[in-house]
Length: 289
Image 1 (cartoon, rainbow, N blue to C red):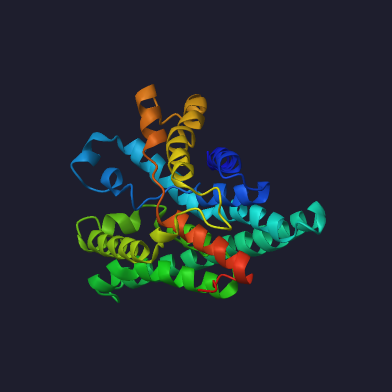
Image 2 (cartoon, rainbow, N blue to C red; image 1 turned 120 degrees about the horizontal axis):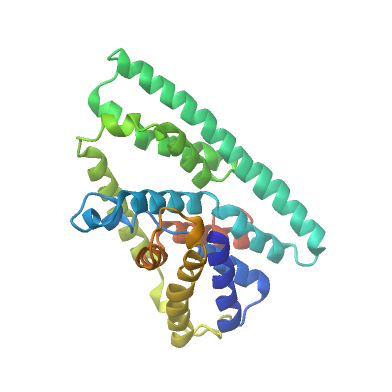
């Protein structure tokens, strides 16, 4: 599904913004991930979530996590094509395979497998022998996420993928979820981090820059509004409809429309946009300003 979302969004960017193919691919990749944070109203415990079957919750949650985890290859194929446009397709493919696939993705997966194995066994060992207090036990999942992202960033791997793999491996059998099911602390932490994240991003977005400029002549009001409606209509709904027979958890067309529409873009999109800008400006993950 993410491949289709990437391709259709890139096509809209190419036609509406009059960009090059490489630039359109970068824009498409930045707008492809779906966001678990903004889906909290159906995935967490709320009045509305009670109307959504658990099979759909699990499906949407897993897909969203996978989208964020495997987003780097889609982003970097466009970045490599733009950076090495004068050196031919062979150089682009070589750099993409060696740096993005082998180093960033494979290393990220390997790192996540190592971290989740060590963390899971240490936590089980400590819990069965009462070596760990309940507050420390509950906060361990947050510390694992921070550790995964930190090590992934230091090594230059896909930190999203490292955190995703570590989380899946850490909680795959439901043991940790059962232990913390009756505790409100994880929900409170999630809400605090989510709110803080969006306040931060909202405060740094340069809304005054969303006007036609010398370098962005095709960035007027209608060029921003038209892709909004096209992406909402065609980014996911057609591919979910086409793959309905291959997804047993989606049982009717009402659920097709729900799964196709209710996949908002959030933190993952902002992260990829910041990463793309930094790579194009400095060749690293740190932008100029």
